[in-house]
Length: 257
Image 1 (cartoon, helix red, strand yellow):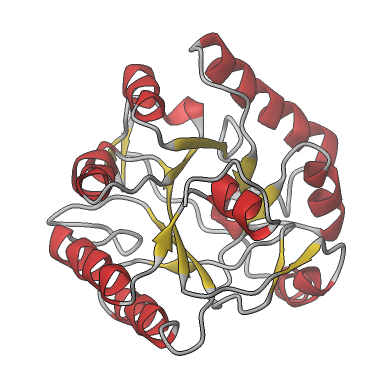
Image 2 (cartoon, one colour; image 1 turned 90 degrees about the horizontal axis):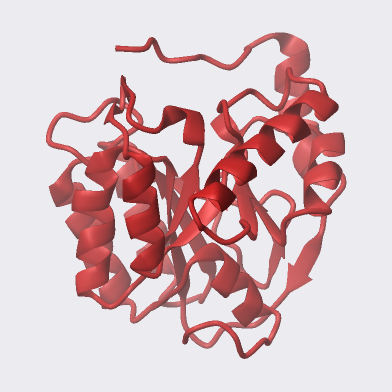
């Protein structure tokens, strides 16, 4: 197994994490008549396909998978990861494949030119598999700088972060808020946010890794996943992949309602 990487906790890095959401924004304003939910999966462990995407498909929903293609077929703290063939099958089943860099590197510590080259390498792998160009991107580990927000915004219509927040009326497309669906308290908090959106409709994105019966602290169990799905159904939320959600919020007609 590969050891889990831990982003820096230096004081300057912590300060930057507070400053970055306030800078280099790309705000979109919107009004919702009912909640909008986007399920997203990072990396992506194979268990998320069987216990995450498949249950969504049974509801007629589709999600977004942020792929770091260097992880294809490896086993790490999230378990076995999907293969290139699995990624192709996920795309063919109607899910959005998003960018996550090739090497899953820390955007707070990597020079921008090096980071963007890694992003391009990831897209080249996906293109060679016949997967369409990624429209949205998720920051590995949630780590980003204001300058990186701007650089990536030239390539992607939306960039997903990891700040847990229900987006009511406004969202920064350069650092889209997202609730972790991790075992225990984080999943409970995500479900509470979904339930609250029944009274005040919001765009809620959720992010997760493995969905297994013995997850890491960054994963959830299949029953927890089912509880999230139930909460989404109970509030009659519209469920769209991130790219389709952005199109919908902009008033476009391409998103599936």
